[in-house]
Image (cartoon, rainbow, N blue to C red):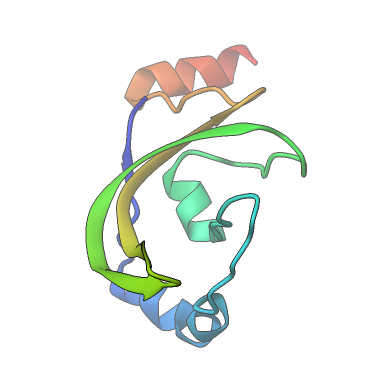
Amino acid sequence: MKLHSLRQTKADRKATESAREERMEEMSEPEGIEIHVSHEHMQKMGMDDPPKSGTEVELHGRGHVVSSHTEDVGGKPRHHMRIRLTHAGVEHEGNEPPRDGIRRDLARAVR
């Protein structure tokens, strides 16, 4: 799977600065973590339309550990970390991997 850069341009950062505060709320979910994927990031990953709610997706990514720590809870260590994804790709049913250059243009023309 091809990974796409998720880094924002200066224009992206300016446009999303106010929304960033809302997204920074930490969520504790017993069934896993939730990841908010903005419109701009979906476009960078080649997703023209959002998948329907409940669609199973496969996410691949690369990033950096921003912070990590261990705390003592009831005498047992609990580990935590925050990761900033810098590159990611998503596949789901009905989603064709993005094609580069002439292959993409030919695929669109045939549709």
